[in-house]
Length: 268
Image 1: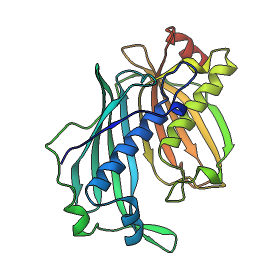
Image 2 (image 1 turned 120 degrees about the vertical axis):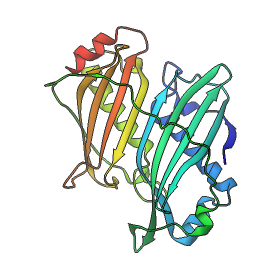
Image 3 (image 1 turned 180 degrees about the horizontal axis):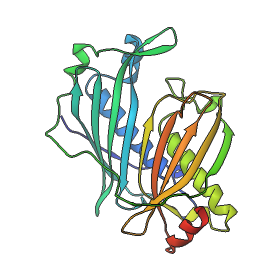
Image 4 (image 1 turned 90 degrees about the vertical axis):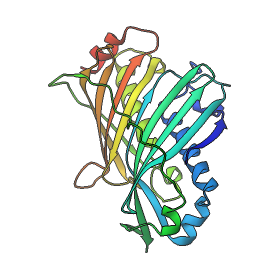
């Protein structure tokens, strides 16, 4: 079943260029998915009442262009796979009047909430049957890049705030994109570039654990390649004090005002 809705990104989603940030496009996708679940009979309150949830394992997004303030977008989403009642693949589209804005694929795991912990568990049949799969569609993938070896590492450290916690009491998944872009912005500013010029092309985040307050977080960023279009690909290892990174993100970025080589040089 394909769910469709109409939305406008809020004013606080936009930078000083009046261009929407990548993390806020992810939040728009989240709103579309939540509306779709609610329309299927599963609003957030029902998940909470039954002590179950979905937690994201991976999300990949490509941006066809930046959103402009005041545009109205058509949001579409559907489940393309519900495997063994445990793993879900969700496809999402945001389209403007003049064509596509962004496209995403999310991978989720169904969990049971018990005593403040989450454990994998099969979804009840009432939940599985509520989401009829859409026809097969290709998953979103990142653009290919030519590898760059030996680039220096940039580290961004901060304390995760309690007021950042989402309804599952951990940092909401778009925040990881915000953190990755902030790491790039800090490095740009240090090199004399204007961080406002950073423009999204694509990103993927893979999660191993959730970040919870008041963890001390370190985002370790390095360039890993350049695409045929000249865009810069970076890897971000997001550590929160665990034995392994909480998440590993890859972002593909360019400068909105051109001269993306300057971004590469700033990060190398």
